[in-house]
Image (cartoon, rainbow, N blue to C red; front, side):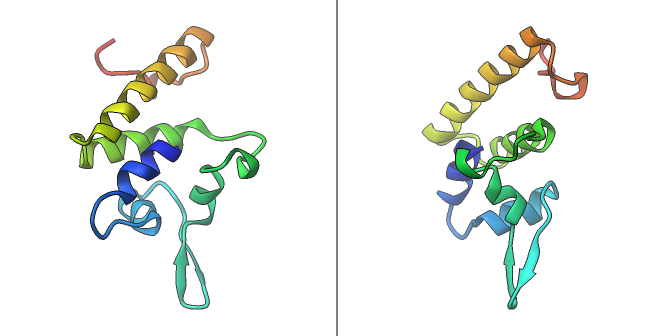
Length: 104
């Protein structure tokens, strides 16, 4: 998830709030007239990661970011990490069919 956030925020005028809103995968809260993607932010650090994280929005967020900005070196690194994660989850039998790579 930090890799997806890094690719996204490296683009001009892109913020984590914009990622949450444009992807439609994360809830955005309003605090004192400021929009914040609180749940998305919890997935960015190991310290704040939920005890039972949901893989679906994490994988979907990475896919969304790669679809929007596929050509940076950070995006290529993210794609490689995402492929490895999917492979490991598939080996462990933990990946829902909907999130398996379409080239399988």
